[in-house]
Length: 221
Image 1 (spheres, rainbow, N blue to C red):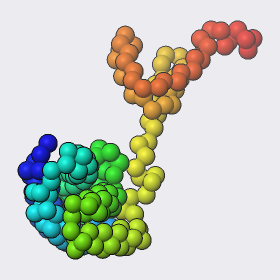
Image 2: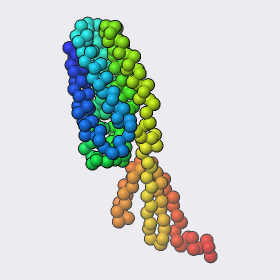
Image 3: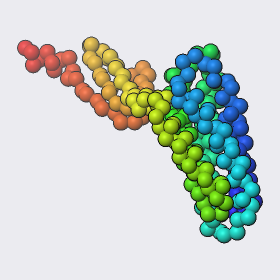
Image 4: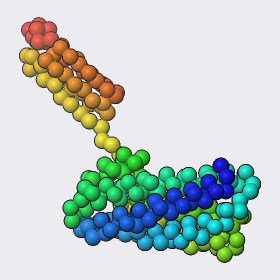
């Protein structure tokens, strides 16, 4: 990778950030929207400004080590920004006037169990590492402070989802057979039974066997 590649990475990340800003228009007026969403939105201008300031100095990059270091940070930042965009876009698409926590929970789990505020915190952290690099002039390096302050303020905001909300619930299924026999499955897996001749299971399965009706009657006699 070369200096122009790093510059293009920053340009692409700027475009994703602009998309996030635009997508926020579809959710900012939703009733019941968690405060964390609004606080994330407030940090987007700082992200945009930092990326704009960083774009020009990277054109002077020459050291392979410097290029690799910035590439790693930008890749990490880009991944988080993409996930944030996906979450905001889908919440906006699947919500009608009212914020739906079930929709957000499902999307957040699918995106790696990330809340919007933790993604923004990661973006701010990555940008802080970016501008702290010695290729940037002092006026850009000073942006480390507002980026750190933004993270501190974001950390004080109530989480948009609780830890328990990000835990996928284990399932349970019951099957009843002939002679009132009962078979129970309690696990994280899935089970499919058809006509007593076909069985399919996924995940950890725990089974209990109940004695045949005839055996139980003999013991009681």
